[in-house]
Length: 100
Image (cartoon, one colour):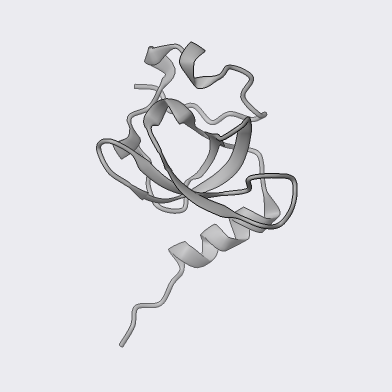
């Protein structure tokens, strides 16, 4: 069950991905940087994961706005490329202080 970090934007669309290269949805953790396929591969950050799918905040286009959606495993892959807008947000998710 490889979960290789993609250093560049993936080029293979989800229907043509090798199933052996698709990591299970539950292998992702909150704040993991990922690529998601939504009208092309987009940079994203995991918000939550279950055995069936992940919820991701992602950049739908080449601007600072974000979207949130749920994706199944073939539509997600790990990302090594930095995305300043998303990755800084991910650090805040990990470093969140508990409510008192």
